[in-house]
Length: 451
Image (cartoon, rainbow, N blue to C red; front, top):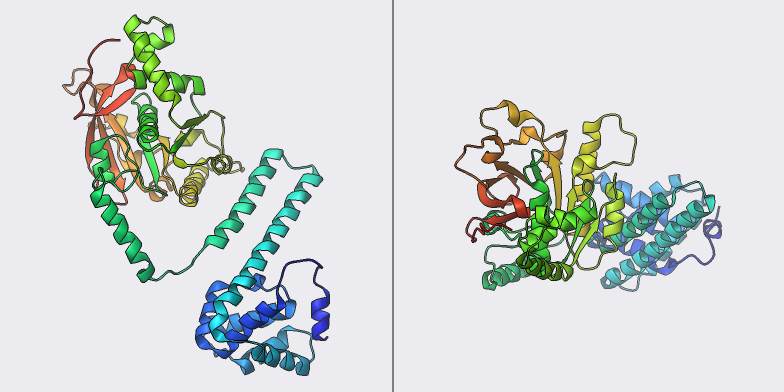
């Protein structure tokens, strides 16, 4: 079989550059440094012409085994891979070495090869999407999720830089430290949660972090997460998205209004409002109206659906999911612990892909009920599996008055930082105003007035 036979099977109109592919292979055969760069930047699918792909595979195999990679060794390996006359193969490989204009232009050749590869990947993704549409047997939501994932994956691969020298990173990190030192929120690298003690301990809510908030039912974990979302939206102007799998969006907004206006939730629900209440409620409603907060109360959500919806949100800053045990993996997994573990891994990947902090709420087992000290521990995470492993930060909420009505710690909540990948663990005390479903820092004024 001749070189022409290898070219004849190519689809007409597909984007590729024979010259760039040849220049990349020729550079790798001629220079060891070029070989290292080619091996780190490309894979066999980047080469569209079959003979070029086979030559690259021969080089790649020898490179992986730490064997010499040169004209002779690659020729010998490629002879066994292709049904092509040896003389023609030798002449073809000699020609690609002779065609290299200059080794210093390798990066330009690599860019051409990669650009063509991404265009072909886009074509393949589009064709698979069209095949799914015309087949008619797949649910529309599944197709949409699959389509977005395919396109997003191409973008992720294109933006991937691989190993980056410290020399390129140290200046940007230095400038970040300098900006942090000059800012009003010294020591807080991430988004401000609105709770000063917690921000100091965690350095704020950091991008790509999976943050788990867990507590027994009725302690107020949903309120804390929603309070944080309201604080982030107000302080930063970034969009905060809340996925509420338990409460309806109307119920959630009622709680948010109570917290924002400091009008008791009971008064809001039964409509028994004084004139002062109406004034506060009006001001709170205006503040909430101007906050970039979005709510989705779809039940039985999957991580894939959440991710697909979040990709369409501009200026995304924070994600809150209430709560983990009400989610579905979307797949048939008999073992619930394994299913929850799979979802936490997907949530961590989602946080990293979207580059935002993701707060996920979780139930606790009945473990604390059987102990004298009822403060939660990591072992109390319900259906734990890999929850503790995947989460960057684990926060427990404990209120002594939840268990002991005679306690002196009335309306005081302990936010227990049980895991902190960025620093130490400790306990931060918060003030709980149950009638407003509102947490505040203890340093803040406690508004004791009845509304």
